[in-house]
Image (cartoon, rainbow, N blue to C red):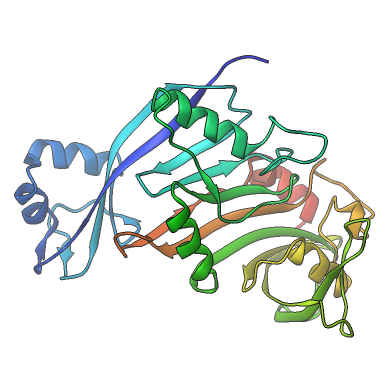
Length: 303
């Protein structure tokens, strides 16, 4: 296993106290006009989560400016493809590849996002005792965004406000739902063999809600935008199978095909308030390379 580097995007976030323009506010914070122009040309400045290009972009009280400080590479344990896209003293946001566990299983202890990030923090802080805390998980074969906490208090706060965190996924499913937009609601239970299923009868089953919208479709597959309203284990996979459109590549829940040689599920958006500052935080992960462009078009067979 080869040692790699973690790519870390560093950002400074400011909240606007008075109405004004972008350049007025950033120069007041100590940035030079030349530096601001340079950052704008590299799309390194965002207002309320969206990149801006204009020096005179108007700002209102309460708006947030995010300024990228660039990227640095930090030597750590093998990254296994993990990308750290944001880090501060409270949270770490990572982009996990398909095929990597979030946390350890009975058979795998170290090839996990959790282990790799703890190892990274240990090396970064030179043994100062920093660690991460699990807030939520992605299935091994699901790619995309995960938020980890750096303190137990932050973990509890994020989990306590989980219903207020916007979580969106791309899903490639077999066939196309008759309703191009809808909500799937059921109560989920789990067998001893760890298979999750909808169970309307058991008091132990937990309520789960999933909204979906068809973005594109062809004769055999469809690309859906999924809004996860609750965070149950395997929820999206079970719910889409329940309506007769299992996630492509998901043999466990009834898929018959595997066009991308991986599960057709990707967590692409997290939107939440920072647990310490209260500022709005928005993170997006682009569609996996093999899903974009001609290959996705060929699979969906749309025009």
